[in-house]
Amino acid sequence: MAGTTTEEKKAPIATGEKDTTLALVAYILSWLSGLIVFVIAKDKFTKFHGMQSLILGLIGLVIAMVSFGLLSPISLILWLYGLYVGIVYAYKGQKYKIPYIGEYAEKYSS
Image 1 (tube, one colour):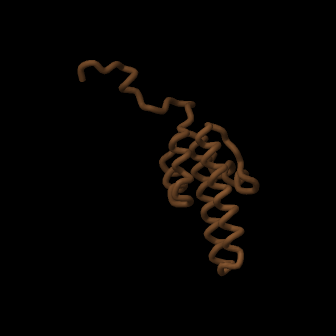
Image 2: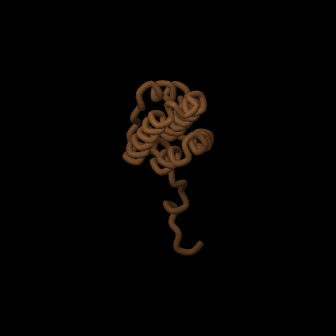
Image 3: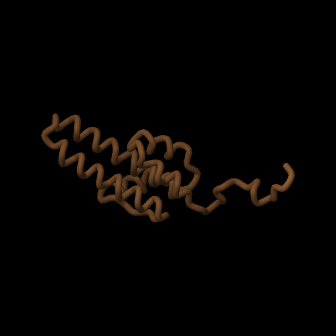
C-alpha cells in the first residue's frame, strides 16, 4: 500500500508489552469473556486477568446457585466489587490480585 510505513505493519502488541484493552475485556462478560481472553491471550498479564475473571465468575455463579437466593445479594455485591477492581486495575496496566482468587489465577496463568 502506498504511504504505509514498516511501523504500521507491525503487530499492535510487541513482545513484553501489556494488552490492557484485552485484559479489561476479560471482565465484561465475567467467566465467558475471561475464558475467551485466557485462551487467545499471548502475554502473561492478559492471561492473568482472563483467568482471574474466569475464576471470579465461576465462584459467583456457584455461590448463587448453591445458596438458593439466600446469599445472592451478598455474593452479587462481592462479585460486582471484584469485577470493578479487575476492570480498573486491568485498564491501569497493573496486576492486582483479588484476595484468594488472585493467587490461583497467577498459578494457573503462567
